Image (cartoon, rainbow, N blue to C red; front, side):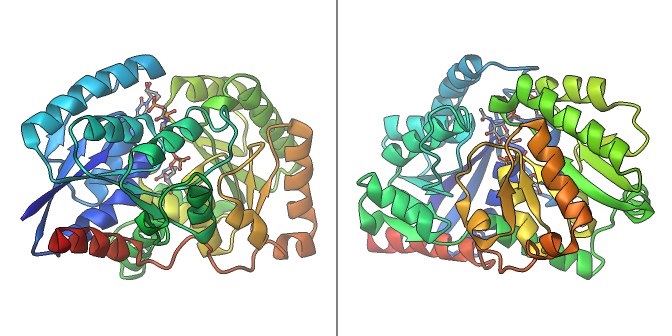
Length: 374
Ligand code: UD1
Ligand code: UDP
């Protein structure tokens, strides 16, 4: 039996790696060990609880308003100790968080092969997203297996001289999770919060999320200003905003948008309730990566409050539009989609370009074969 360590730190890593955990458990030659760094706390526990996953190891590193340097140094020490104690045969990290980068780094120090899930996303802009663009470029230098979600992400890796035979287009595991949750909702296996159901049925609504570090300060000021103007202009529309727990987000959003009648600031939703809200909304206003990948499955237009994106597939299909954080542009684009049915419908018809629900199966097959051949 070969031991596969899966390292998870934040909400999106958990959402995107849980289908892989379930898939590894089906393999007779592999065993899985889940290491939670706890870079996130409440938002991570929400996902583990939902999927009834108990991490084998918990490093519990989150502190309030943690700095990148503290996070990185603490993670380096604790993850290195974890690898020395546990001696896994293979390590899987996902995406571009600090947890993902540091786990790849210490895995390299300990000469443990690394599989990178969601490899090859690029803006080629060092500061956007910050620090994720550099995290993922560094992970690509360290990884041995690159699981690219799309053909475009594979091409980005080839351009960086990553050996072609180490890169596989697998689809994004986020779609695997989405299918698991959609099935559970359709089979009534999971209950949706009744207050949320009422809120979603009350009026047509726009679902809002936001958390990117490069938007802190002026970016979030503009985002809040645009939502306030839109809420005044469109009283027949609700704005449902599950607010990220980062104090740099929460404090400003609550100060600027609290108390507006048709703006509902709510705590982060657990994944199933979030997917339910996504399936019911009119459109999505977000700076999130994962939400851009999920929304096309529900034919929901997505306006992305960022200047650039590493996920251009959605933009190229016409279902996603980059609107930046200029408040006039946000107001203009949301107003257009609320007023012009044709403009709205032109953004609702596409096949999800990010995956088919079988990404985890493909990834685990590659890892399993690697050990058979070894
Ligand atoms: C992190 C990732 C980002 C990812 C995002 C997903 C890094 C540098 N950033 O950003 O790539 O897109 O997660 O959401 O890896 N907090 C809580 N409870 C939680 C989670 C966060 O209170 O469950 C608060 C804490 O005060 C914490 C702060 O949010 O210090 C920031 O958390 P951190 O993980 O450093 O950054 P995020 O902005 O969440
Ligand atoms: N999500 C969630 N609850 C929320 C908001 C988002 O479960 O209240 C999920 C969403 O479905 C997606 C993921 O969290 O799968 C995105 O996480 P986030 O936006 O924090 O990070 P990013 O994807 O930008 O790294």
